[in-house]
Image (cartoon, rainbow, N blue to C red; front, side):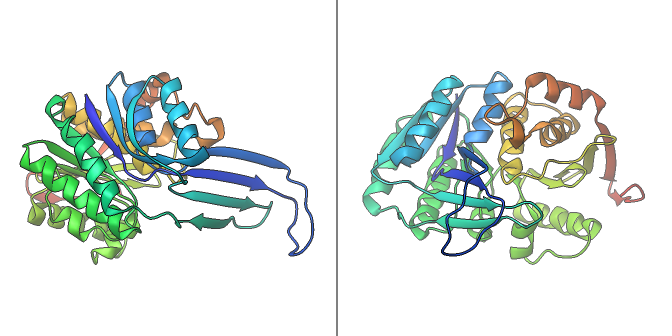
Length: 317
């Protein structure tokens, strides 16, 4: 069993209109309800790869029932602390030729009693796992406190933690030395890592060594860069790009957890992460990708080495 923390998952409502004039009535051309960014997608990928995810967190309202139904349909076990209201709602307004307009509702805050209930549920499951994926949004101070307490508890029990949190307030998490970390540009910038891709990768490598983190995985436009103490490489698929979705990081995290669980070699984990990143597609939701697509991408993935034997070489960047 792989405990997968989707601490505060929400739903996303995508609405397409032909125009928008304030104060007037408009017809909706297309409407789609889907799960927002969360490790629910990590669990989906794990299940696709024949893993055994066990999703824990908070859920409530119509969105909570929708998320629970999604997990049940995909035969993914879950154990949520149930709330009366939605944890998070995102309204995405789309018009052709215009950038998306996003409305985010973070109005429902977690409480100290919620934290107590969640910890009780988690302690009851820890004995059955050796690895945990931690995901949640750091916008809520209480949610952040719960995640940090969870990380402390899990590491105290000698379990490995894969970190894939949302938001830029990540310093407190990486200081806890997770086993692996799926990171994005915004989080690196929050840690003072800027510049072009080569500079970012080098700085991430140094940061990884300093913090004693085993692996980091960094999605780019052309695949996923894997960083370890002794090696850096990118998995690249000719003619394919990493999908531009809000939850590509969560999907990658699901693959990373499975790679660690099955003791894959580092290069194979990078291939798996890149294969997932290029396979997922929100246009086919709720079936965001297939096992066959991931396997095909892995077989076609080329590994480009950026660091080995103590030397950097970015000629192919």
